[in-house]
Length: 554
RNA sequence: GCGCCCGUAGUUCAAUGGAUAGAGCGUCGGACUUCGAAUCCGAAAGUUGGGGGUUCGAAUCCCUCCGGGCGCGCCA
Image 1: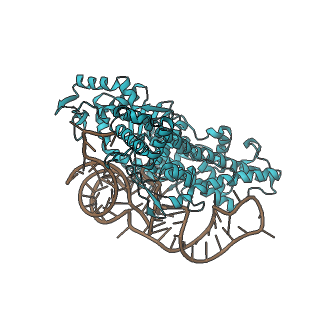
Image 2 (image 1 turned 90 degrees about the vertical axis):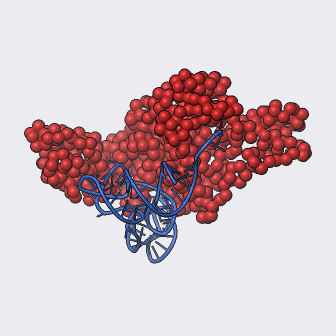
Image 3 (image 1 turned 90 degrees about the horizontal axis):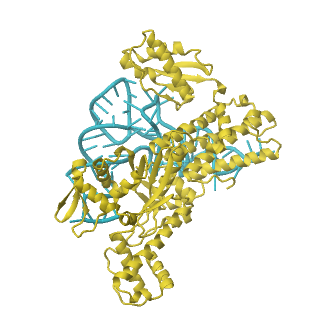
């Protein structure tokens, strides 16, 4: 509908201009759904935007346009000039009804679109080191990345979800040593467990017990290097399996698990470094190999190979992002914790330097989560092992509540996550507000069928009976869903979906309290049931984008 | 010190540069004999952290100050 209005205005503008009424170009104006019903069904700001270039008052311009717009299209019932120069469109009562047919025809695909044009996008998220279980912060990244992937796919992108596994390097060494020491301790060997650098969490003891179960005390007799290596591998694979299980519990499934180690096995990292030397992007100093990041907008040069010959994480990351683009992704989205934000200019610099498509990379920073219980902060520290895991949170509050909590906030704002609030199965918890509406509609439709008013097809109802203000507003809201999905995808902001669902559901509950759907009037009941079915479908599609279930009963 | 993010009702959060800044919770007052009260209706509640600027129009963009968070490793 918005497109239709936009086209009409463009035509009218051209007609006016050819008569010399206007001189300039048509600006990039907006057709919007006004907040208030008093401003019509749709509002256009074109007159205000033209005011400057045409050097005329906006209301005068609006007047000239309105004169031409009258009778242009049968759906336009009334036009109004309001405020500083808005042109408000009042449309015919039945102008929106067709969306109910669209919903019916498209079903679970309603709201999807092709703005993505099948372009290949990678969303890389979570990517937590396999050194410990996921915590609440990872949960936020997981919910966001997964929902974003779903939204992008629905908007016509070809999406791959990838998890980057840092399975090599210092932290892995520390992990292996931590396990080795725990293993020795459990087998009564008298060893010190140093304070610094190692992983002390209780989960390490569980893994050590598991290791004893599988290997008995065989590892005790090995040379230390070999023993630690084996421990590293055992710990990492156990923890990674745990992460995968936790994510599955959270409804997140990756298409691809990319191992950092493979970048070395394939020779990609050394090859990339060599290439950088050849291109003159690197230099040696103090025994280390540096990237000239300052030439490309970063504030410092960055080390890629340390003085002792080992490569840094950054070296891997260069090869990794090169690899991503080599795999043919047109757009690459990285979701990181906000504590990594200092890393962004470095990565941007490397893309620029390597001639990779820099604007194809989008980094979304997810701000910290403050975990609370009854308003009191819960201590979180990975090294000491004192933290609430994502699994514990999911088990306590449920996957739906946790996801919805994450996805009603913008990612760049910090978030307080109160376990007690998330757990309450009541008004304080918005996820139930939305889910309840779905369950209510399901129950209503079932009850109607019982009473002999079956759910009819759009073709068999008289949509003209839907004349209540609330009905018109709900139908308009339903019609906005596709553009909302498109906007959410292009802006990479899944939280718009939950905000939309809250609004839709609010309108529904309100309507429900005011108007009876199933009555003795068969025709009216059928029409209203069809509308309810439309709401139900949009709720299902919207919740699916968030990865939240739409229960029929609760 | 430098850089990035944030600051909106008591509170948790919304608001493609648009009209009178909106919701949930909390508070106060109402509504179940009919489709699910995990709901609805009403009320109180705001100088959008302060101050400048940009323009027809700013919570939104720019500058500055204040406050909070996070970074500033040859860690990841």
